[in-house]
Image (tube, rainbow, N blue to C red; front, side):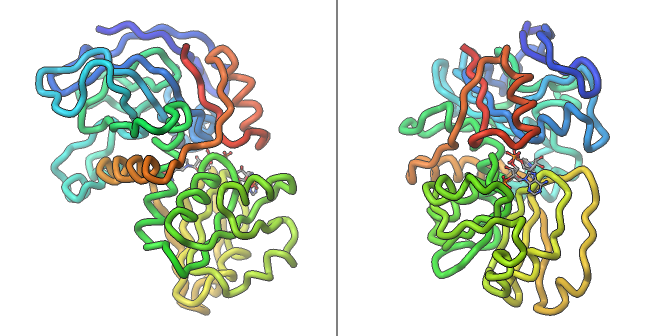
Length: 345
Ligand code: NAP
Ligand code: ZN
């Protein structure tokens, strides 16, 4: 077994504390990394608080991992010792089901193994995440990082980046389209950068009065204070696509009226409570309400390469692992610009 030192929530909603544990020995298809950076996703907070009802404790969060490769198995093709590699939210899948064979490993019909809080297919244990000093992962679930990008700013691309890039690509967002991004947080600010780079005109709907200048710097064409219904109504019937990144309960109906006929609103934020939708919000205009979850391995590598070409990284505040509890408190209060990244040094 491989020794690992990290931080864990020992039980429900507890403060994270130092935690030592063992990871499985690497197999011939695995790489082992020393973790350099790990992003702090709102999902980590939701898991610590068991908002989705399946958290297992002790829980070591973290699924936006950048590491330096320290060991490779004999079957490993694409990585060498010393390379910088990325690991996201999924670390294994069955590889044979209808989703896996379509490069949609995240939707594996036999359950994708999550980076943490998941049953490890290769041994009988629960996975522990990246708020720790090392990780062991099958080569199929590790990514090459463009050398021109700051690795700390790349870490959030491994979850927040692919979660926003994938639906933008799936719904073919591009030149000539107007799209909305709801919530300018970790996911939202990357959605703005990707949608702008894809050529769309972008409107941000934010509850925070102070984010306008940042949103425009990231590529937004307009910023609307979503707490003011009059400002929101200006966009009635004008948007081709909306990406909703909000982590808390809110009213989707207000935003559905902003879609053009045949437009789609895609939910990627995952509030722990249901949000009622009027059928009429969809029926009049033949609108679609959809969802999306991270992205497959090939698409994640495509997203990283696209980020390399367009110079896209996250806006980050780096913290030491010892300061994780303060960072989580600030994240819960929507006080982060725009992603905390743990520097493991
Ligand atoms: P985040 O950094 O906290 O950003 C969420 C943003 O939502 C905030 O910055 C804020 O933007 C807005 N917001 C917060 N509270 C709100 C409220 N009560 N009403 C309206 N807007 C509010 O979180 P994140 O890391 O981007 O994650 C966002 C959500 O995506 C979380 O639910 C997370 O679990 C989920 N997620 C899903 C996937 C997936 O695969 N689908 C992957 C990763 C994360 P403004 O200040 O601009 O209003
Ligand atoms: Zn995440």
